[in-house]
Length: 479
Image: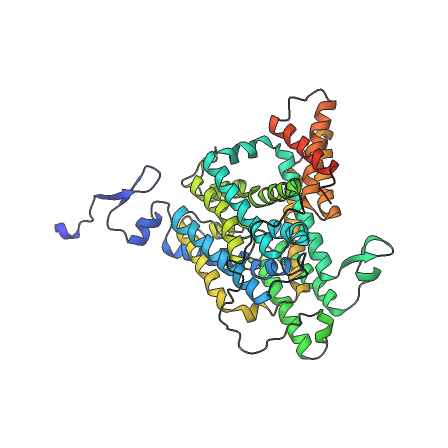
């Protein structure tokens, strides 16, 4: 055997976890540590595509949530919202791939968008709301850099964490039901079945049909069930409208009709449209609570999601340590500011990243592929606009149902846990505000522990937080 036929036995560079990568690998392999993590380029590409398909629904749902009026009666342009959503997802996911080098994808957090649309925009303009988004992103980055983020996460009892996740799920589901016209206000009670107390119109029927279809696909464990259900619902909607079975008026202003080419140039009209200040009429307490709520909604599950996906990819050990964890957390925090600047709401890591990991993804190349697909979507706004609100709303309800799976982690036989979690969960959708649910849950937890003589169980942070929420409610700030 000649010397030239012998593979070099030197090493090239450190893989980031103490091991060495064999020389002779491609630059792609060396940069993303593909071989070192037991993966291949083909697996990473397949994983990236799978992750994109699993979370592409955000391009439809985020504009739906942010499509309402602000305090001045202004609305953001739907094409611009779609562009902003795709842009922010592409930028943050590519950053996670190239810098974090982990198979995690980011996009607009539905919980953050829900807070912006129901709690923030009604009291200020959309540019001011996006300014608040930038502020909360900066706050999270500072919390990560100083290590305070982990302290706060550890200070909040685990059952309350699950309760907040479930409450946000019900809150998102309620938004979906209301937007679809399946739930409304009426004389029969605070909320009724349908607008005016009865269901009417084919669009509502298509919402129900899409909802059931997605649940059926999920039960069959069909990959990309949410996106597939939306596509089927949209195709039926377009066909029914084209055939004259459903008039454009019945769709409530957004008929599934394609006018012109399915491809268009991106609309960057919302980029950089942010304002800071002008919040004097709200008061310092309310503004502080808005930022706190956005921080909770934006980063609450991020650490758990990152570690969970990392463990699935065999990157994290039993103690949750994984290569690039701080980078990943910092990029996730920066997603709040990036989303605000883009006009798309705060970005956060999506649990759907696990679907790509299931296909073999182990490195940042997978996230890079997902980010490139989001970037390509910048040019397909007309196709995205085809999806009716009623069909997209079905996905909101499904995601809400998925978030309720955390109920299995709560000990419902322990009343000191069950009561605060119950209040946290039910008050978010009932009051249409995440802050009220979190506040009542925190206060109830501390009060019950005090009644049991276990006042040392809640951390100092929880007692301080409880006092802040009592002041918040007592002064009428939680309007």
